[in-house]
Length: 123
Image (tube, rainbow, N blue to C red; front, side, top):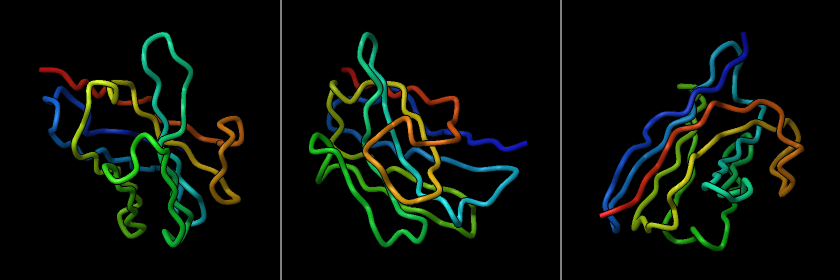
């Protein structure tokens, strides 16, 4: 069974850090671009970051540039999102998803999705 599982979310104070993980089971992530997305209550899901299959290409939403870092460890079949200097507006459920043909700005082009992990930034 193909599955993506996000973990690492939680409650953190403004200015704090979290590292999210996206682990795959039932398939290898080596050939997939991986995107991180988030959805806040009452808002549409939005792209946060993406990494190509090799990790050689990464991109970020303007709102997280300089604060978030995406990385991947194909040996562990896992992709990470390091989130620093967190702000209350980063509060959302964070999802990872796969795409076979490189990163895309279109959410509907991503194939497999995890169940999400909640990130809450609050004092």
